[in-house]
Image 1 (tube, each protein chain N blue to C red):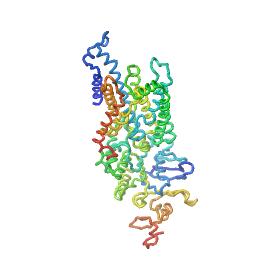
Image 2 (image 1 turned 180 degrees about the vertical axis):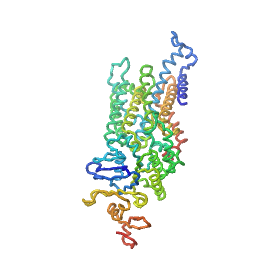
Image 3 (image 1 turned 135 degrees about the horizontal axis):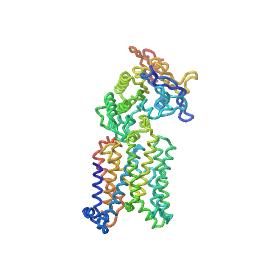
Image 4 (image 1 turned 30 degrees about the vertical axis):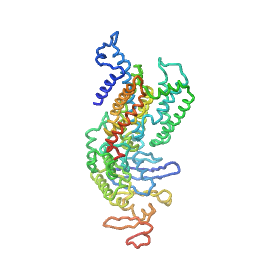
Length: 278
Length: 328
């Protein structure tokens, strides 16, 4: 096992009075599916952007496959890591296939046109994400779930050993959420891609992700407690840790080998629920 | 295909005019003849330079429009949105009311003032936009709008204190006219514009991703800042050249990119060259109408671009609306 991502003492803040990440360090082995979880505003997207080289940490280093991002060109980074952001509708009406092919821009020939390899990679990415059937439709005419799959296909077509996803399943219905995670899992197992995905769904993370990085809000934790924890998903996403990170009460249920956590509203406090509610 | 069409349109338009010309008479005159036929004289000295100028200006404005729309990720952008028009206008009115008597190599310096005003303004706007943030195009757009408004106020102030003769010269210049009989100016301006469009074509694959988003472009390995600066500088430059050659001609830089995009899609590798050709054709036709419709008088070509272009664009919009995202 070699390490795909190493983060060392990463600190970042938006301006002086808004620290977001404080001394975050971790290592992700190649071929791992890592979930990043934590409440809103805790710095999950910021961390993804830092890992993708889109933001520079104020201090600390990021190494992708051993190469320090500070000494990598934007092209070097794009060969190592692809980013899938939350779906949106771009200003101009590009079709799904045009959008997927954009991932290959770096590899275009001298006149700026794609090669057979580029087209083949785009075609395979679209097959994997089941987006081939609407390849020539514009992004604006697709549903949010279809559009998200197109953006994932673009990430895959970049053909990088590392794939970062910023909340790939927000706005998607249950079926599409599961479909996306099934797809990511198959990419991980088939191609050995290292996948890092931000998720708000701790139960999906429990089912699919080998490891989880849980970020806690800065300031709320006791001083001796770190601002994050990383490890095997089942060891990180325990009821106690989730309650502490999200400041919410959860109900946990064991089904087979999996433990599921259900957040409880204030009204649930009086009812007698079976199982454990801490 | 489109190139052939453009050449045919240019040839046809060069034969149309208040004075009918026969192509046969033009061709049959030997170039070194001591007594060229009047047809040849009109064709070579009046029509051809005018039509070449219209084609160059149309191509420049349309390709600059495409580029600005991509860079600003805004379908409402046009080549003048970042202050080029008001900057050029200020340069022109300053040149005219200061009553300069000097000439540059025997030519009026008004165009040079327009060029400096245009580029100076757009440079200022770019600088302000950069301060507001690297990838917040809103800051750049707002800076452009405010600088435009500020300079327009200065133009209005200067027009209100200008003498009526100066005023007329300014307005006539700004409304756009296509008379340029100096072949040297035409060659230099044309060279700049063609080189600029070729340069933009080589940036067009990157413009595709940049038009989607800053982070999208960066994450697929595009040095966004460098490409943006290059595309921005080239399109501002060719717009400034076009404005100093012909004055302010509206509509071409906004409508032609949209019309081409509606029919051929948003891929800049096609969109940019096709818009350049379509813009050239459109302005050649519009100028032909402008100089023939009320002979012997000539209308400002900007009037025709809007009157012809508006309905034409609306027809396209209705016909192809299903391809546009915001109507999808």
